[in-house]
Image (tube, rainbow, N blue to C red; front, side):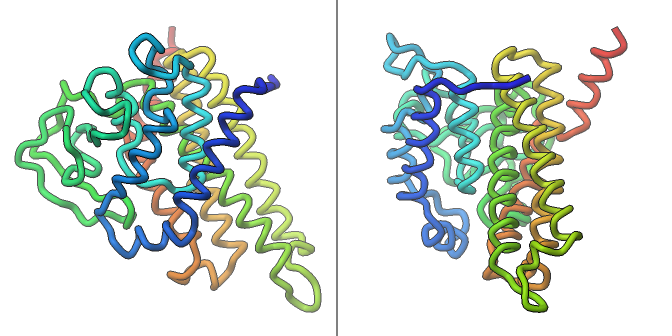
Length: 293
């Protein structure tokens, strides 16, 4: 299946990429790593001004009036840039929580027994009383654990939020593929770029195949909004992001393990995202139930 983006969709994606490169480039990313837990409110409001959170809100309610495919494109770019913050929770709260659509209000959501960005949030959807901080693997995703799972919370178990997480994972897969290819072209060994070696070629080729497979699944799920399609997209996107980041690290070799390289940040974020909404188990069970019918 081939998906051809419309001119408006391409403009949306290009505009979001330009905004994030301008407001959250590598220097800003590294500054955020050095100040964990601090959310850039100016950047959050800039996202609100750009319509990031109000993309699917009807124009009559002050939103952009677009659909799920456009939201997926925006979240893919956010994932590519490693943009921190409770993006999906605030996006889902647009129209329901005052200020969420414009970026004036930061909204977090209880997801099972975990909450991302609890202390930075103005509003928390779900029961988070008694939550205790955890040491997060990802320096850009502070976590809290609630005393018990919140079965009634409005967390990322929402199928739309699961799809938006998949879109972020797709963005990470895209970015680590870019980083791997860039390094394979620039790094020389034995007088030639390491990309000339068969083992490195295979790693980069596998990166591309997984990314494009996940892209088709994510875009298809954005069109159908079917829970089974979303579950499949989530599984493929998680694999593309996590395994892609691992392969990117392998291409970088010993350099990839250093703190100065960005590869480990992409891998850690992919791991943390993979735990959202029940992780892969919930998606696997949904698909198994659909296949058993």
